[in-house]
Image (tube, rainbow, N blue to C red; front, side):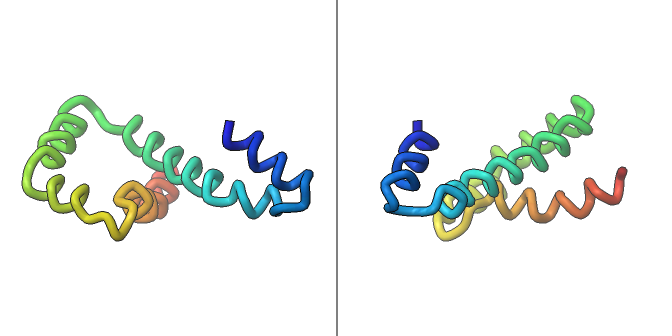
Length: 85
């Protein structure tokens, strides 16, 4: 739905479609990095990661509103996943 709004804004001269959708494209790329990293985990590693996120560390990371923890995580994981290929 939001894509249609951005396209309409572009057609009406109220914005540039590429500029308006850039945050969505970046978020999508970040989610792909995380998805590919999680796909490589076995059940034990995935359980350990989830267990750690339910504790003190997870509370601290997800309670800070000044940054996007998923974006930070994907930026940390991206170089590591490229090294695996």
